[in-house]
Each structure stands twice: as C-alpha cells, then as structure tokens.
Amino acid sequence: MKAYFGYWIFDSRFSIGRCRGATRVEAKSSEAEVLKSKIENRKSKIPAVVRLLAPTFALTLAFAADPAAGLPAEALAKAGTIDLPTALRLAGASNLDVAIAREKVTEARAVSDSARARFFPFISPAIVVRRHEENIQAVNGPILDADKQSLSAGIAVNAQIDLGETYYQNLVAKQLVRSSEAAFAGKQRDATYRAAIGYFDLARARAAVIAAEEAAQITGRHAEQIAATTEAGLTFQGDAARVRAARERAELTLLRARTDQRVAAARLAELLRLDPSVDLAPVDTDLSPMTLTTAGDDVGGLISHALAKRPELDEAAARLEAARTNRRAATSGPLIPTLGAQAAVGGLGGGVGSSSLGRDFDMSADYSFGVSWRVGPGGLFDRNRQREAASRERQVELEMEKARDVVRRQVVEQHARLRSLAAQIEAARKTLEASDQTARLSRQRRETGVSAALEDLQAEEELARARRDYLSTIADYNLAQYALKFAVGD
Image 1 (spheres, rainbow, N blue to C red):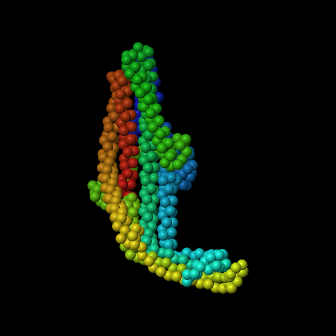
Image 2 (cartoon, rainbow, N blue to C red):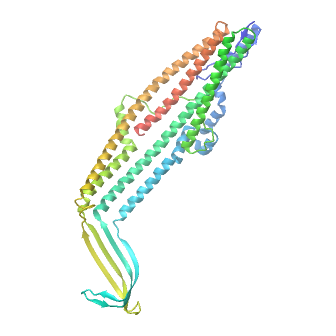
C-alpha cells in the first residue's frame, strides 16, 4: 500500500499557500500524477494570505489612497479596519492630552493679556449717601455736636501700577505663552507617535495571527494524514502522538496570537478615542519595509537637527527665559517706583439736620498723583526673594541641559536601532529563503517516501517561525523609521 500527501507551496512573496491534499491509501499511480499536476498548478495562484484578506485588500484599494474621498476616518475605523494615515489623523484630532495642552495655551494667553492690562487704569463709578449724628471732631481739634448728611455721585479713574513688577510679569507671561505653545506642539507629536506605535503593534499582532493560522492548518492536516496512516498500520504511534502535540501547540500559539491582536486593537482604540468594542484590524496587513528616512553615518548632523527642532527644547528655553526674567524682577524691579493716580469728578450736596440730600448740590472734583518705593520683603533689599529667583533659574538651566541629553540619547538610540533592524531584515529574509528551500526539499523527500512525516512537519514549523520573525522585524523596522523621525524633530 502507498500513501500520497498534499503539498504546501511557498511563493516568492513569502506567503504560505495552501492545497487540499488528502491521504489516499492504495491509490493508483495515475491518480498520484494527477494530484501532483494539480498541486504544481497551484503555484501560480493567489497566495493563501491574500485569499484570506481579500475583503481587507479591497477596502485598501478603495480608501487607502485618500480616505477622505470615501468613508470618513471614523466610519473607516467603525468598519473594523484602519490604515496608518487614518490612525495618525485621528490621534491629532481627538487625543485628550492634546486637547488639554490646547486649553493650557488658551489659559496662558489669557494670563498674558491680564498682565498687559495691569498697565491701564480702572474706572469706579459710585453713589454715596452719608449721615452723621452727635459728636464729631473738627479739623482744628475741638469736639462738636453735629447733625448732617450728604449725597455724592460721580466717577473716579484710578491707577495703582507697580511699574517694575508689572513690566517684568508681562515679559514672564509672554514666555509662558511660548512655553505652552511648544508643549502643545510636543503633545501633538507625542500623540501621533504613540498612534504609530499602536498601529504597528496591531499590524505585528495581525501578521502573527495569520502566520499562526497557517501553522495550525499545516499541523492539522499533518495530524489528519498521520492519523489515517497510523490507523492503516503504516506509521508509528509515537510519531502520531508527536504530531498531535505539535497540532495542540500550534492551536495554543494561535489562541495567544489572537489575544495579542485583540489587546493591541483595544489599546489603539483607546489612543484614538474609538469604541474599544470594535475589533480593529490593519488594512495593510501584508507588511513591507517603509522608507521614511535613512540611517546614515552622520549622527552628529541628526543630533544638531534635533536640538534645533524638538519642541521640548523650545518649551525648556521659554521656561528658562521666564526664570531669568523673574530673577531680574527680583533684583531690578524694586528700583522702579509704584505709580498712584486718581481723578474723581462728580457732584456733592447735603446739609445740616434732615435737610434735603440734594441741597446745594453742585460739581465736585478731586485729583491726586504720587510715586512710591517698597523697601523690605517684596521690594528693595529683599535678599531672600533674590536667592529664590536665582535658584529657580539654575534649576531650569539644569532641566534644559537634562532635556538636551535626553534628545541626544534618543537620536543615537533610534539611529542605532534603525541601522540594526535594516540588517536584521536582510538576515530574516535569508532565513526565510533557507526555511522555504528546506520545506520544499522536505516535501520532495516526503513525496518519494524517503523522509518521515515528522521531518516534513518540522520543516513546515520552521518555515512558519521564519515568516513570523520576518514580518515582526519589518513591523519593528517601520516603527523605527517613525521613531527616528520623532527623535530628530521632523
């Protein structure tokens, strides 16, 4: 008796194809030739990954080039699939951290406007009714018994301006606006970067699911074939048990991969503020290396570019300038006097006893102007305030230098990672080619009855692992492209 097994085809795009081979006991040689011919014809057909993802690729062709021309971004996400441009666009539009940073910019601008408004006087309209009974002291000293009342009505223009403090606080407020705007830009970049991380994590998880599904199908068919030959007495039962163990292990791997994909989808939905109950899947599941930037040898140039472009450093520079302004306010501000002025114009009337409040009512005007200096706490010779402001300035200087060190480290780290992953892709590709060749040779040996089923199964499992590693490396490489662009401030 002879047994003939189905063949597993691996095409040039590293997608594992499928054929529906079945165990045939006591098959005729002509039937084997027909089966072999059918299997060879399948090499030119669409790979299994593409067939499995045909609806996804159709949606990609319709909307990936310009999602705005078809479904809106939210509708595309609700449909269960999402592409990278849509994820980045949603991250910038609905992220809560970005919204909070935007409100902080509004607050800082309002504070700046308030600081500038302190240079202007304020107006006090008033109506005052006064009545006095019994004793009162005259301006020259004697105590008099007086009964009088009065009515005054008018408007006063008042100005109480601490010129030095107001001037410097206005400068500080402007720097805080600049700092909040830089922080807002940084939050936008950070939200976009985290969305890219979430998307590529989802793409990696989806690729792992597809590879695990192919591996589970392979081991499942091997298990069915081995079970048939074992029942016919052609295969050792220990080999059949090992194949069943491999099938269960493949099912466990598939279950874990699907869980990882669901978790990645929920995390991406959280970042994009979408319904977490929607099981998102990436449109571009068939991963390929992206080219957003190149990891050249000029790391110094990248660091210089990052130090000039990163909004975190702009934010730190604005806070440093604000601290320096506060120090000048503590040392030079008290030398500038406080200006006080008032102009009150209105009417005054009244008289003795219960006379009418409007009696002798006529115009009344008062004017005053003065300058003053403050000596002591909060003014001249306040050494504690000066020491505090100098210490804060030094702290911000150290924080800015720390931020510079972080930027330098991130650029070098992401540059090295991108270069390494570029080499890893080539190594993973070679591993995949070698695994493909091993699997094809094992199939040929299995066809001729030279090798055992376990050898064929081991080769197919190695091919599935190589494909998983290759796709995972591509996902890491694509993410490293975004990470380097983020690190250099683009």
